[in-house]
Image 1 (spheres, rainbow, N blue to C red):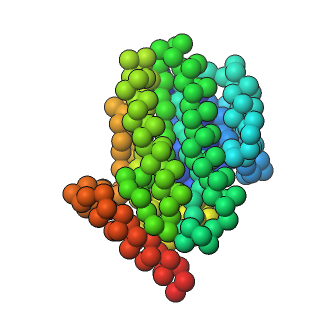
Image 2 (cartoon, rainbow, N blue to C red):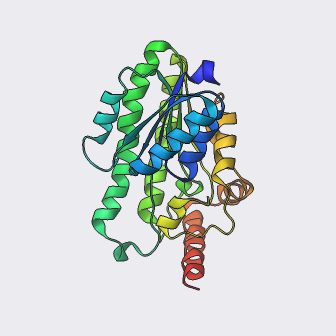
Image 3 (cartoon, rainbow, N blue to C red):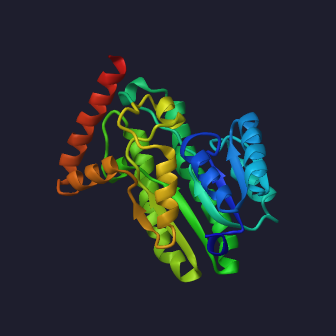
Length: 260
């Protein structure tokens, strides 16, 4: 892994959940790390722990990916760091009626989940292409394959990420760069808590990271966990309008359980 995708990896959303699980898994494999998230104190504590346990170099960049200029700052600060792997795990979601949500927050979701992913991928992949090797892991979702009422903005952003990953994968493979879209179902994480989603049937972040890293070499799309695979099989046989209605019932169920 390190010889193919190293020596350093940059992980966004590294302070919690899936991003943290990726950081821990990569450090265990000897990757030096650049950890990106908003909470600097949490990042610094994680950096010290990973460096002590695995003997790797861990740099921290605290920043809000919804803010203009944050990605440019990250790229500038990593200009001399040999990043061979990008794990774009940062993101957030919401659940509930669209008109009940704050418009600014929904737009910020698009900035974090989509715009920052494009900017960061373009900047780092440009560098990877010069070395003839590298990898990109983009966090999609099982809900990326259809619209979902009561989570419309979030699912739209994940649909974008899924299509983006599929598209650039074909372009970048001849350059020695592998692109993987990771489409989990519900995951027990800080992301789920912020979105108001339930985690009773969720996969662990560690499972998502482990399955994703095992699939990185071949690229494509991976659906970690039994629930993600089951939902994928159920939805693929339905017309798109049917998938949207099924997703509406799932989201309604999540809202009702959260209120119970």
